[in-house]
Length: 243
Image (cartoon, rainbow, N blue to C red; front, side):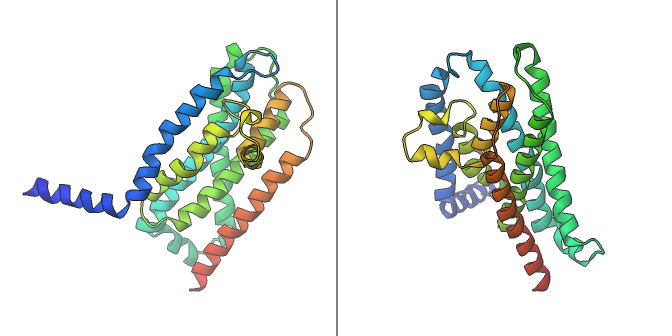
């Protein structure tokens, strides 16, 4: 009888979250199909694929590391540990709490990127990773840490954080100029994907790695995301405080 009760609970949960569960289950196979169809054929102007791939992996590591450092832990702290309420009644200014979370998440992302650089050192050849590269990594990390912070405020249960990863982080991981160039995507869709923060980060780090100028457009895009999601995070936490 106990087994039947547990199975019934799982069935009710499945019915309640049917669409979310289905979409999350389908995304990975679809992304892998795209990778194996397009990504493996990618070269960067006749250069070996690793010259294209390594900057993309570094960019991706800053995204996944920063997002992962914030999304799950903040969701649990807000929903179950009630840590957010404790912060609101503490002497700590709320903007400092938000900034600390964002910077801490970004550092986690940069740590993940450094590990990638260490692992790929024997294969990097003459690719360049300098102070500008690390500045771009840090900025990208702050963007995704801020996005994670906003989504953690919107989470209704601890299961939402993994779903946010499936809906947002995983598609960007595969599509945003990491494993293959966005130039191979269909027209229209390509322009949309190129405006996502990971696409710009990968492009800029790849340009720096090959000794080229990055320009300012990528920085403008990253700062725009940072400002938008930063304001959303501040607005959410101050509104909650004033309820």
